[in-house]
Image 1 (cartoon, helix red, strand yellow):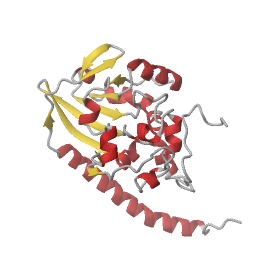
Image 2 (spheres, helix red, strand yellow):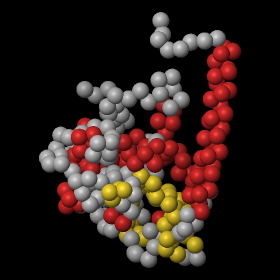
Image 3 (tube, one colour):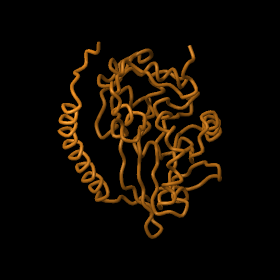
Image 4 (tube, one colour):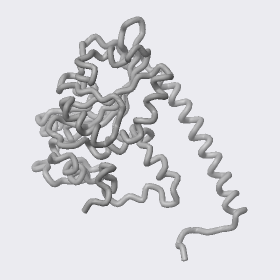
Length: 263
């Protein structure tokens, strides 16, 4: 016998219609926030960022591919990683199908990581992905857009991620969970192990999304979001939020998609 509340169809419908009003308000609020994102001031980019891609070494402007807009997913894959971040990988599993639609709506897309291109391509092949993925070659791009930090910043507590300053990381970091290390998220040691790294190495790279515009030959930065700001892009969670038990999480349950079922 279920311990969850039960009721008649009429009782369910009444409760559902009450919830619907709040869902509609959330949708309206989301539409308003989208307009506010578009109204943010644009910041001109004058630095010559370079990336390694399947088409050779290119500029940020080249990543637009003749389009006026560019969306970038900052994928956690540092030079010392053996595999991409499993959380980023779960998000990226949804990219293949959307890229063609974006490109036919004047929006280019690329994932960007610090790892060398050959390492990205090997993992991309393993995952069966086809979306564009560029290597920033450990240049300034990841640092300038707040998704990579140094060991010294980590130790001294001068990391500013998701628009706020983080406390110093306690020593030693190895084997720590994020709750023990930073205090507000789930365990990280298990995730770091999936990338073949330790906690400090894994957490110096961070996830994010950034948007850019190309206007009259000039590239502008228009938007960036990090951490829980990426929830809306993580497709599996949007489905789980509508499942009977919701996210129903106890620790890290997700894996690289070809790793489920392994001991």
